[in-house]
Length: 209
Image (cartoon, rainbow, N blue to C red):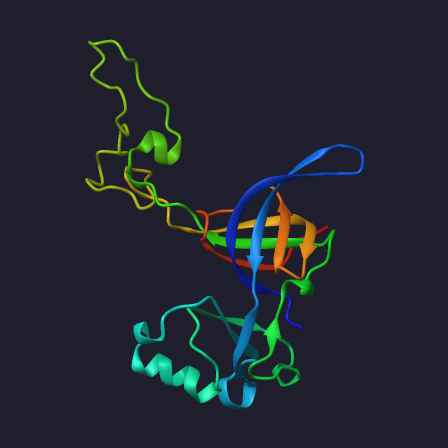
């Protein structure tokens, strides 16, 4: 089975151990995901499978996308993602991938989209310190100097006010505390990015010790 699954963030709670310790966990509704397509080196140049997750009214799909699902003989799904695998031939189109591909105690990386904060100043967005708040200061929450006067331009990468949030964020090395295969739920230690109901990708930790 591929080590990776799509899901949505349910919310945070806590789980108590046998010793009475409270562990903060985030609950993820992981799958079931359906294999939609297989990618082979001969045809596509790489080995992968395409999986789908989530429901959506069929009339909201474009005709090309609806035809993609019709060709596979599968009902249209809201989200599509590709996952690299060593041998795509071991999978079947229409095969279900459930939460039980992960086990308790396993380390995973969780990928999500952070909450959108809209337009934010440099203090909120980048953690800048503010200036003196006395009336004569005239410098309170401004971003400060933009650099040298010589180039007469703003250097690339300068931290300034702007749009904050809605970024792809990966939290690494989270421990799987509990897996409920019957209800397709995975509880991981700690917080993960995104709002409740946001799309989440759970995959094996790439830097686990």
